[in-house]
Amino acid sequence: MTETSAELTKKLSAAVEKMPAFPKSVQRILELTRDINCQPKELVMVIEKDPVMTMKLLRILNSAYYSLPKQITSVNQSVVYLGINTIKNMALSFAAMGVLPQQNAAGFDVQRYLMHSLTTASLARMLCQKFSQGDIDPTDCYIAGLLHDFGKVVFAQFMPTEFKEALALSSEQGISLHAAEKQIIGADHSLVGAMLVGKWQFPESLADAIRYHHSEISPENIVQSCLFMGNSGNLLVEELPPALIERFGGDMDSLIGSLGDLSKVMEEAETFTKGV
Image (cartoon, rainbow, N blue to C red; front, side):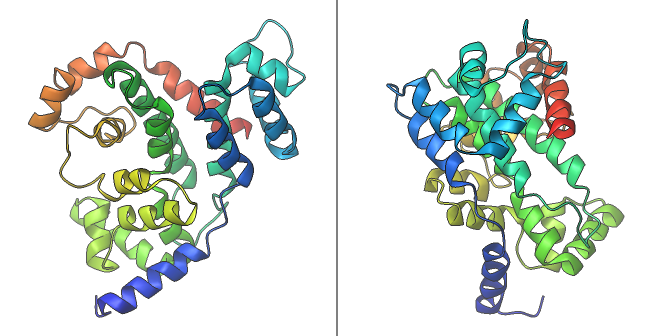
């Protein structure tokens, strides 16, 4: 990499700025639902003002995956049946999918990426619910899981030549993609992902979790810890660092076993990717 730090920062910033904005309706949903006194009707009003989100929500809810006793025909019904938190996470997922490119010149598999992001998000949320003792909103872990690898999308869309080289290097030499990115581009997707969520005006704590998800894990940081476990790779079992074995009270095998049947996580992700 021959570029100086200043040149690289300028190049990365320019790529991030080209990404579409995150929908204001979803930002508003997050604001509302952080208030424990949020009324369902307030959430319904925001979603109903976004016809695309409403259409996607109803399509998924009426799919075979949910198998609800009767057809859902309104956003209000959806909140009654599934609750505010489920609808909020669905809205987040739709928004993230909405800014994904259909194609890219780097040969990056967007569908595989999407499946990984959705399963990571669900696993991170489940871990938070199980281990955070109520001090962290599980949605924070869900968002981190959903967006943690979005830097790859930035590279694929706006730095496709370099990213294609990094993908090839990772495959040929059997090294991690983030290490290959550093060799070819000079920075990895975690840095660019953090820059992107900053552009989207998410909290700094989320940007930090994304920025350091390939760095040394702090077991005191529940979002980062849950993200590491969820990011272990489409339910593949990897070795946990000693600090996380202590944090979660067991190795990866026992931890996955404690979460129960995870086939529903994959099924839900597949439903989302096919139905939206």
